[in-house]
Image (cartoon, rainbow, N blue to C red; front, side):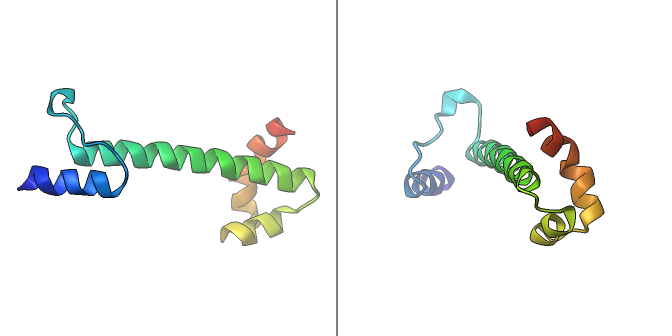
Length: 85
């Protein structure tokens, strides 16, 4: 029953089911996929912050867009923004 549910989930998401011989269970696969997506989203965010800084956008505006204080935004993304420019 559990395998059938996992197969339905993977088909619904447009993925092929995880083969039993891989040693990776479906939930672990989903976790790994989410981690990869998170890393890609972080790269995109770093690029966007760098572009905003290069375009003259200040840390207060960046912080407001991110929902965090300007000082925290600068601490998190300042080195990336400087390196990317």
